[in-house]
Length: 323
Length: 256
Image 1 (cartoon, rainbow over the protein chains, first blue to last red):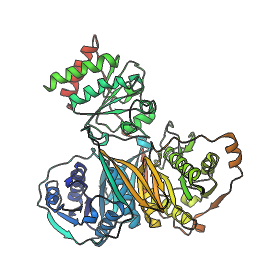
Image 2: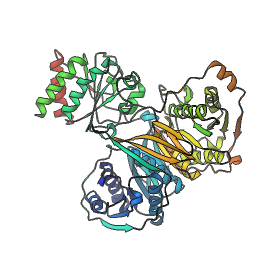
Image 3: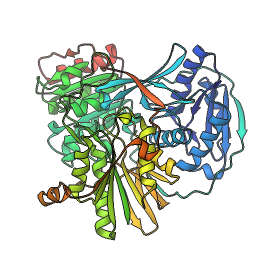
Image 4: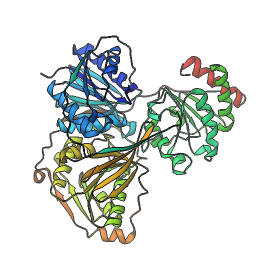
């Protein structure tokens, strides 16, 4: 019988990404119910020294695949190794991050194993001894409870939703011998965003602007608020389609789906396609002069007033509070 | 060039989604159906490649009878022919079954580049493109925002968290399209007229030799969790409201 809960850790440039700890913690919680062991799979080149960090978040055992062909990440190479480790160990459950890399990898692994995969889950549980994954569908307009007919049951977990909980274990590190086929794909260049801003999908605080911002230059007041709160600026589809903000800033059904601790919507009316992208945020603030705007129905705190007056005042109020 | 574009018919982004009382799915009576927006980028890129390099574009879709409208839309945009995989046994297909059906249909025809949307906006799974690539044994390039074709290979740009990658791969390959790749064209009136006469091959699961047994099953669909009623911040002016909001965020919500 399949056993063991596996997490597929994600590292970039030799550092574990936060989602890896979120996966480890979620797996630990499940394992404490099923009595399983938590194993992590960590792939790359020269990554053995970071394997033990996973133990701090409840991982019992780390399978390290160390090979120059696994750095940088190439889908087909990583999928080959991950699928082999899951199969060789007869894994019962495998958790991936629903990051760009995790989504790319998990679907390829699932096809290799002819297995079921639930993407971008916001909750996972053991129900009647079976693994159940809960995930938003129609961009959060409804939720699906997914069950699995194959093992391993696979799920990718939405970043920022599952808490990373310290749970000190001493993880046993096992090096696995990985043979990797010659690859057809090659990374030619990595162009890093040098703005120092956290990506929207990983941000704890997002200050977002919509049509009510009136133009691209007006976003300066949102940038200032985001700077004080150490947050990232997002935008609605209307603002992106108008060319005020780049594509990567778009939150919504045809943009990014985000779950920050705090989402401040400024001049965003709350079209259903926008709400779909941010309604899993923990705390939602709406600032809009139209008291009838649908965004207020989703907001924990609403301010009905001119955002061009409120936002600068909020920036200075926060500056004082955080000083 | 032999170019394939996979399309799916989905509810419009403005559609209100109502969950059936028994949790078995969504009530699709009042829905306006459209081509998945991400698939539109795939179709557009396929047409641009054809216009520049010659060849033809085949549209492949898995879906019930109504999905034919979406295939015709793609043909009206300028694609040449279609394959409609339609079978009641596939109505509850998961990503693996869908990818198997697409792979089986595409295996038999020449293909240099296969486009899929990066995800469909109904089930939001985003798995089919990668699964299709694996089942065909070819590389995948997901979430692509720019594509350059160079004979036997392609070079693409794909954004990741905090960076963007330039990736090169050999053909054939699967490319999943992300917003930003292009601006999809509208079908012209002559295009719509011509589309009616373009060939569409209809196939069922048996003809493709695939199983409809799902690996992952949506056992229950539920409405999103309700949010507690919010608080409207009062004050004499913007400054007062802002100060009170900052206090609430700090002391009540504890998020700053």
